[in-house]
Image (cartoon, rainbow, N blue to C red; front, side, top):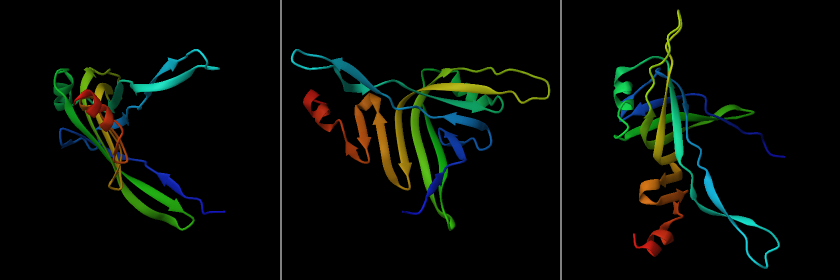
Length: 173
């Protein structure tokens, strides 16, 4: 039996357009990549199947621990995309304790679709949550690209393999 290995990510820093928001983002919920499937049925088939035909829209949210003017300025403009980075450290634990720490980075491009004004409550911080429509995502763990999706450029790569290269060639671009 092999040794138990536990990997943990417990904190991160958020950047928008290269500006650090250390200590200002309470929570960042990254998008789920959801494959869209279409049902296929035909004579002679004993059943129906679903086949992939793309990915669903991607969305993320960021919960802020106060109202920040520079964020609200960006959130107020749904016509301008922003570059988002979330950077973290993944720790590996074994029976020897922490044995490794590697960088984890998520790069996203999106447009704000929710402009929060927050809520006020005596003796509590104002909390505001922004929501973004995401068109680009890239996940890098320890220098290795895990996934890269660029919806506007028809790019979908998994561990460096371009899954849509032939499709782009077939449609002429």
